[in-house]
Image 1 (cartoon, rainbow, N blue to C red):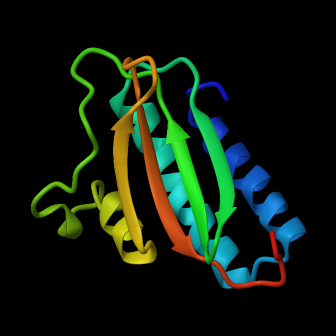
Image 2: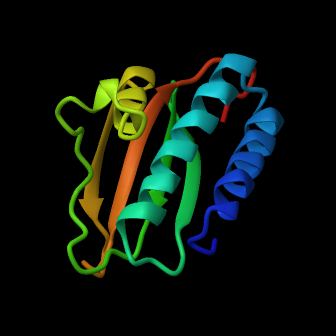
Length: 128
């Protein structure tokens, strides 16, 4: 998707539709939408990406979210900023950590960007 703010809402819509098809519970859909919003927004704000990828997969009892950026000068691995929980901006990764069973990042295969991933608990009717 294009790396612009309007793509965040589109990513949420697509992910929500997929999770509905899978039979995911409403709370799961809400949590995944929030994590996608936070991580996708970070990729827009903190990289020089022209495009950002968003993948969602059902892996055992978890939903795996992966947001891929194209990096850029000065782009670094995402991390929680000390004291940011009390600020208007900067709480996103606290939320990601609170909603997920685990999250992190790794370089892309070509080494020019990063993949930020999060595993959220899955409840629903899907048996993928």
